Image 1: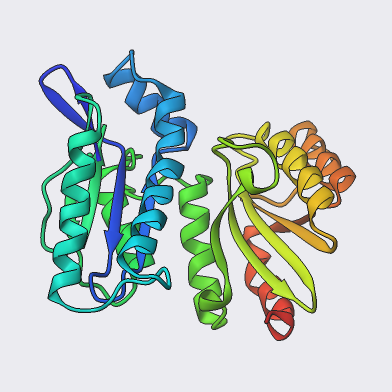
Image 2: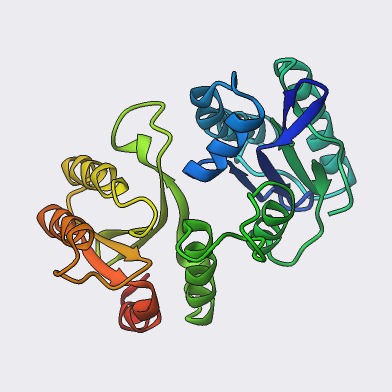
Length: 281
């Protein structure tokens, strides 16, 4: 997806979908450094519009799926591929002059330009989404193209590898809408959700070294979830071990503790996942 900046366009997201199954993945900018990059190139960019665009597009996809198939699923075949392309072209016409879908390319993926639209034939849509996002959208940090150490994007990439190695990836909910529990339009997403023995679990990456203040938003969201879910549990995967001697760490640690959120250091996530594996349904 592309955002128009004078005579240029800025990539703000990627849409990947499988024309055979209708399965899709959508990712748009949301991290502070990503939004800073957009504002640097386009000072007039409406941040609330960008953050709300993901939910709007996903709602449109859901409604379109329900229209294309009474069961909410797309049929396989070349005609369905054409239906998707028609839908995307129609939506492109309704977007503002400052926001457009980029031309399609070979893999079925689309990048949102405030970003490139690409048709992606990939075995793992999540991996393909991350690759395209790193190539076309994510800010470049030094030699790394997926984010410097401590970034949530880097943390999520590590967590995804761990989940897959534990053969739990397909049992997880990904990028759960916080608005389901807080209020409509809440742009926050919870990285992973799972279910075990009647309990609903949530796991969120938290960059203590970069954005420790995000723990307050997480604590608020957890409180709202508990009001609506009878049995729930929460874990925050931190980029560093939390040590009491560090004031920043102590702030995060005490906020997590008071909210009833388990702190799991990233380097210990694989061990934590191993203990959880037999319980996840």
